[in-house]
Image (cartoon, rainbow, N blue to C red; front, side):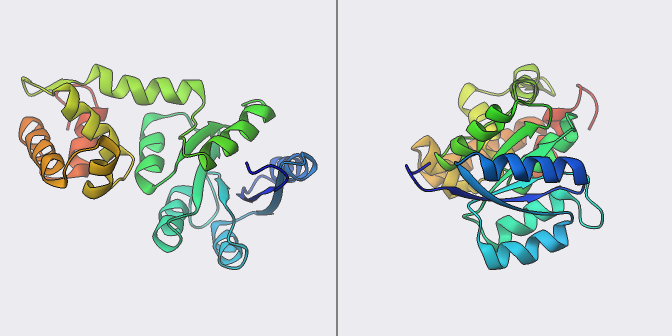
Length: 213
């Protein structure tokens, strides 16, 4: 956070008590200014007008859910950072949120200072996650380095990790200091080893126990 300048946060949360209390805490912190909305539809309208730096997103919303809303935000305003703030800790929702473009994933029971620091980290270029979420993400790749008798190399595992966050080939190349052609070659080898045809199929195969597609 720039010294003396509050971070503009927009909260999308349908639970009245949590929405009101978190909004109050953010606005009274001296570090943030926050507006809050109970639905994705209202939140999208507000984003178009307010252009927040960070959106805190619940998953279970009436109407459009938080993962769908995250995907819409990243399509319309790619510079806006979205951080999930939810009770859900199951693998499928975590990966769906990250694939939709979420930069971080924090559990609601986290301490308020942990949430505040996570917002700062997002704007500093990081991807904050609650400890239990981070273990699930790391574990999903540690457990599944071998599929169909083929073992992924360390570099292929890194490429697959970036693919799981929704980055495009050129963005992965930039992150890994590789040429786009080299990244494409790694992706082709990943697909061949996993016997899949797409990013989604590859990520699904790496998430589930061996033998399940």
